Image 1: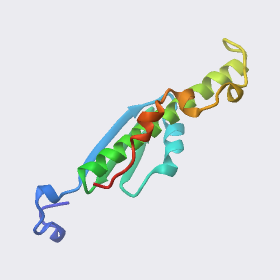
Image 2: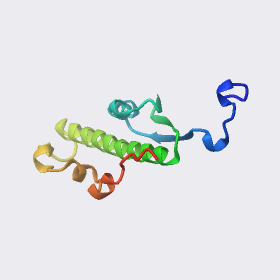
Image 3: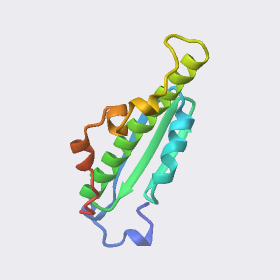
Length: 129
């Protein structure tokens, strides 16, 4: 928004949307960003540049921004860890260190597989406050 924009008339800084940018790097940033894309909302803009992902988030309230950032970071961790496991599994199958195993049979809960505490994950509900 600019000072000359008529939509700014009467707005105070307290009325302005809250924004955050989450910047991360990954071995396969395009894959991680693609995995997150279905969960992106209108308030999110994601860019990939090489091994970096930048996600800009804008929400009307601080609580809404906090919830959206929290959800995004949890989803980002899951996507990145699954991509890492996929690379490791493929390397083993291609004759790399270790032997190929059926990870699905060994993993009963995806939260355990990616190291996310179920109680912490349940505390990411968007309250729109």
